[in-house]
Length: 128
Image (tube, rainbow, N blue to C red; front, side, top):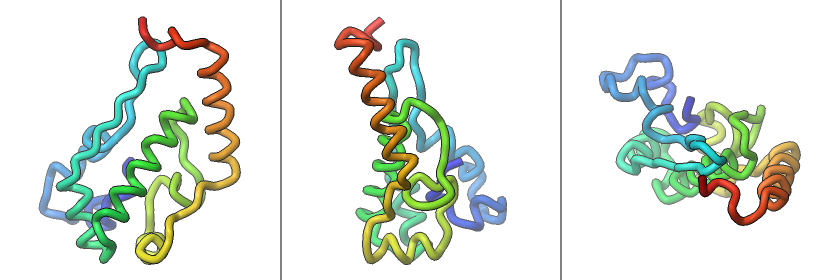
């Protein structure tokens, strides 16, 4: 589930039924051969930014970092804190408004492992 959904959207209290399908709308997706696709519907991110009181460019940057990290890690997992958290809280948005949320140490390790694995497969990997 996307961490940039508002609390109302996560609980189903928002009037917007499309909010239920966020994971399908803003995500990274694995294709055969390890090629990934990232889709961000910016109008949704912008609406969440307005509701959370953070500038939309800051939230967009965090969303992109979050999804790119999924691609680089080559796994679908979330951390207990930081930019890779499954659900950002209002406190996270408040920090985000002042400075970037960090990558947790385990996320950095997983990104390095993902990059090493991609390098070991060679330049033709993912082109099938």
